[in-house]
Length: 152
Image (cartoon, rainbow, N blue to C red):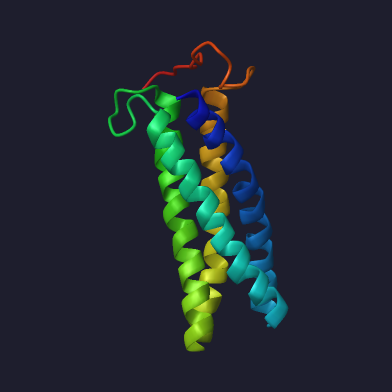
């Protein structure tokens, strides 16, 4: 399971940073319609989808109590925001791609603006995961992670 914990943390950082860049580009492209920026949104979006799915699956494999509310308080928020981020990322990428292929400008612009919600959800998931698991140590060291548990 150590390998999956390493994969989870490595695979989330690039999509997290890129989702912020795509959110900024999404706002910018709604003001100035530029085909180069739409191409970046399309292909960058699918890269973020791939990295986010990889992070969610590896997090699911390493989590002890993933689908219950019995886990640590901070990781419950981490899970919920991670899934919200995944759905937001998929919605944004599919809307941009679908709008681009069918020449529906409104759908494409909607997808570009959904990147804002995706970036905020990814930021929240990263905050709750980072503060709960590895605020002062790398989580894939030999010993099991120490979780900060808060009041429910």
